[in-house]
Length: 114
Image (cartoon, rainbow, N blue to C red; front, side, top):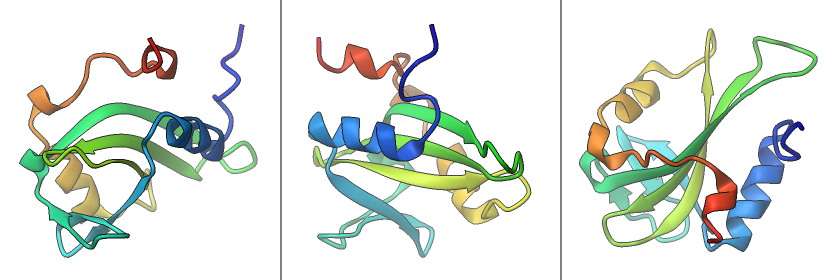
């Protein structure tokens, strides 16, 4: 059975918002920034709760990753990043620099509600 959230990033974003992941994070000046508070975070201050990859249905080059994030000060939110040929290399490096131990081994949205 296919996951009902597998086609569109916005479906996952809405579900995570219902689970308390309401902040929107932007990549700015080599940091992740909470768009509401303007607080910035370095890679070691970011924890990846889950991530989901998407490929455009009409254009396979339209690829993105939705990151579900919690920061060192317990701010919860999401960040949508393009990847593939159109990726921002500095942004991709930021996520590569997040320590491996800051990535959750569980990326199933259904596990968040248990």
